[in-house]
Length: 129
Image (cartoon, rainbow, N blue to C red; front, side, top):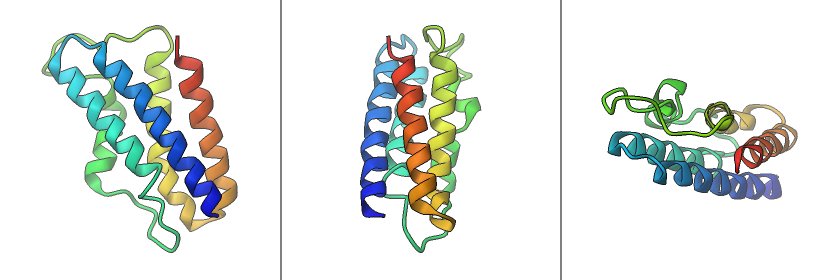
């Protein structure tokens, strides 16, 4: 179980680094901020939010930072995020998977977490140029 949690944490850090790279490309400060918040939330939910014996629910602030509406950009920044083809869908997918990772403690943590870990790795790797 500890190996699965450690692997998920590492995947979360890699996925968060990818999202931070997306943030650096944004010309609008609001878009950068939203992506930085999403990156922090990905890292946290894929790591220390996975608590065996816990409730399996990230707090409201983390869930909010991972919502599809926010990761499509800051509505007050005007325009859309500057993303290459496929990055928008990959971003939403990674956020959804990261948000679900803490719930694995409620079922078969090792099996479910390993599958989610592989999916996050595949999605974020495929979206990289």
